[in-house]
Image (cartoon, rainbow, N blue to C red; front, side, top):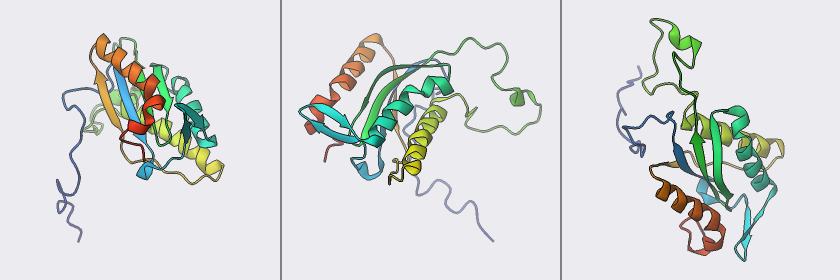
Length: 181
């Protein structure tokens, strides 16, 4: 018999997510998504200029397609680096009177303890990662994402401007980047 409680709370690092925040809420989110093992799959940087590989071009193209799949998302600054991407995703959902999901109107339906998982940051990033991964598989390019991603809720216009500058200048500072190898 399998003991489902055996590893509960063990062997999994705690979430870095802000527990008081609803990641489906309207806000600007700064995200960093890395390749597995920080492999340089997206291209190279020469003299501060990012030269995209075929997979890097797909990573860029898939990012720009996000609003087609998630109409409440607006994209801000974005950059593809050799082994990661940085971007700002802005949620602008209209005020909702009832619910986003007809299924959630059912009484007694089982509820996900993490809340709705279809219109939040995790679903946007999951969709993006799937798009790039599918391109890699179709083109027989060996590729894997790091399992998690880093996010930060942008809380002020000053912080927003600082993060935008960081993203735009990231290729020029590649040799100082913690992801550089």
